[in-house]
Amino acid sequence: MNRTIICLVSVLFSPLWSHAQPDQATQQLAHDVFKQLIEINTTDSVGNVTTAAEAMAQRFRDAGFADSDLQIIGPNDRKKNLVLRYRGTGRHKPILLIGHLDVVEARREDWTTDPFQFVEKDGYYYGRGTQDMKCGDAIWVADLIRMKKEAYQPDRDIILALTADEEGGKSNGVDWLIKTHRDLVAAEFVLNSDGGGVNTVHGKPESMSVDATEKLYSDYQLTVTNRGGHSSQPVPDNAIYHLAEALTRLERYEFPIDLNHVTRAYYERMSTILSGPRAADMKAILKNPPDQAAAARLSQDPIDHSVMRTTCVATRLDAGHANNALPQRAQANVNCRIAPGHSSEEIRQALIKIFDDPKVTVRYSSDAGEISDTAPDRHSFPPPPLRPDVFQPLEKIVQEMWPGTPVIPTMATGASDSVYTNAAGMPSYQISGVAIDRDDHREHGKDERLGVASYDLGLDFYYRYLKAVTSQP
Ligand SMILES: [Zn+2]
Image 1 (cartoon, rainbow, N blue to C red):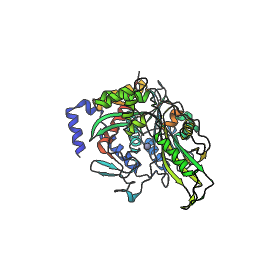
Image 2: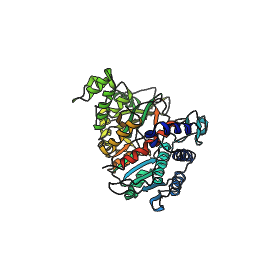
Image 3: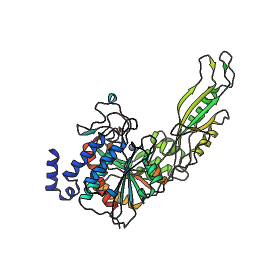
Image 4: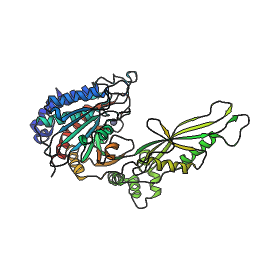
């Protein structure tokens, strides 16, 4: 009821603004699609991504999309992906939108509400996937249906892929589609709404970040073995001490500053937005060579520390077999987040040098937990260029919707499905119009939620942005 009154007022007093607002029907549709997606369990353990893909396909069919432009395909019954093609004039090459339908596990007893019920409470939508990332999926579905109803014709095809197993599992949809149906998803560039977005503090927008590159994830297994013996007669050669010393060397080691054009652009922008010593330090690390004292000061912030370089840290430890025996085996896991341009094997070699102890073997541990003597030579992809046909329309719409809010290219310190599309040579950008307060990030956590107003703005944002990137000179 309130929303109707606000819309009416805006129609009367602000015709320009109201013109771009989603109509009541789109808002209702977006709400219903969001609710439907949240209430279809798409976890790896007991969920079904195919059910969600089929439900969205039905929505598109009902809106008049041709059956031949809708595919539901995947490697097994539970993990099928939806690929939709919204036909354009073909003036430019297609763009691809990727969004994952699967969600992280959530247990009812951990939550205040049922994570697989769409609960509307105190201005928020609650449920698993409200932030990560069924909001983005539902927004695209509703916006594309709205555009179809208007008979909008884009100047290029818009391909939407709603996919499985981003959060884990063995059937990653984006990877599978690229390997088996490349022609179906081939595009000039990719938009992924699994990252980026409007950063707010108490609802006030501070910046819009666009994740334009990511680090590469790698685990390494460290092992020291020893013949052991009775603990009443210790000897200097001890597996635990070897391992502990190696880890202490890692603790003291700092990978060199390693900026790329995305992180450079990030610090350039941030240094003009901020002021004081932090801004000065940001400017100083952009110098060639970077100012080491400034880098050390910035590194006290864990985010800056990670953005500036590769990081490796001990995350697990396991050693010994009895209280009264010398250890025969000591093991640790070291988790690395590798800066773009380096391979897992390159970092394995770097670790061997850092440990500087032939007793410590360093092996690669794959995502599936398989251990191998060497690591893949696969490099994290170099950051794609900050394309004007992506960023110019973005800047324009951000200034319309959140005046004065800067657009900031960022490097995600985690990883997303963009790793597959970038590796396939399609430059990928994580862009979202959804706003989340700095201290309200609940992805993968309990009581995940998204503000109702934030969702509506995100809906309006992508409607405008999709039109802008599909109507360019
Ligand atoms: Zn996600």
